[in-house]
Image 1 (spheres, rainbow, N blue to C red):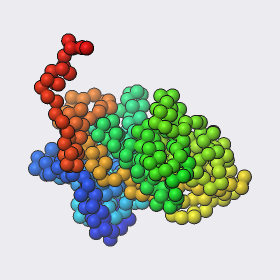
Image 2: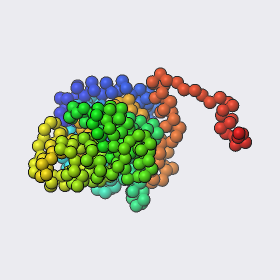
Image 3: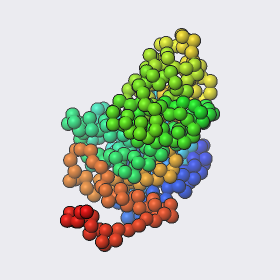
Image 4: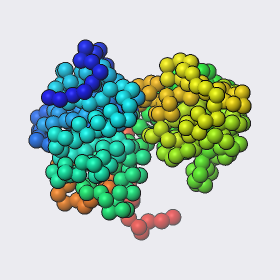
Length: 418
Ligand code: ADE
């Protein structure tokens, strides 16, 4: 087995972390149990580019239990939990290529290392693996039956590939399952982003003004969690519908050019580039904290910030203070990378349970159905989504009502009105 990790000596600490997360992933646990018996992924080589966390380790173990051969690399250089990577290698015999803090060159070297054994399926988070395969490693495309994609940004990139006629196999957008984005994007990003900011800075949220750029599922969750902790929340948007929604959810909505004068903490979750630019940094309050929870480190224009700064110094781990030429200081967290996974541990296992149940069942679905699918982006079938919701509710010891025959009949009829 090949691997490239920080140190095998970390494996025992990683094992404890993985076991801890497993306690909160009962739905994935049930799938793992069934996979062990039925081996639905037998002989399938999966190249997975995901955040290497304790939750992902439980997904990798589930895929392996299903008979897959798993090669795992990181989908972000700062999110890798080195002890988890070590445990997967030592205790589970899974090939991992991921080291926290890897530079860009090593990041892509690791992606290529995952492709080189050959593969039948991709499991991606952000589409870097899929784009590398389609651009630089095309010789490995021939045995690929399909893939899955975890996040909004990756799905957007995949849809661009379909539009340009470039995608060479079907991909299931796990992100678009209801049991994924309603929970992972909303409650996961909402909580873990604030967790990252707090662990990095120990700032008091109550009474502060938090500016959330982007009111998609992540932004909605984040704005609401910040409000719940006593922040005054401002939302910035480019989409009028989302703008109205944010207003009616009780938030102040304004352009970034205005918000910069009021905010204490700025968080981008737009999925777009250069959302906070030099003209914004210059007008912020002295000491403003700026970070990103969108997939890529492109939302804050840090190159431009450097140009308007006299110097930069690290004041706490992953906390950089930029001293601007105009005399103000701007505090940037995690070099503009995902703050929730860089400064904290990412989403809690309880939400990743549903996201990774979707991943596992999507992989199984592809084994059975990929041959009849086109080179397009698909969603997880509704039945699977509903089953995951059912199992999650059960794991929370919560039951719900059932439709009566009379109600079922009513919903199916068009004759009955007032
Ligand atoms: N994405 C966000 N949080 C995550 C986590 N805990 N593990 C894997 N991927 C994630």
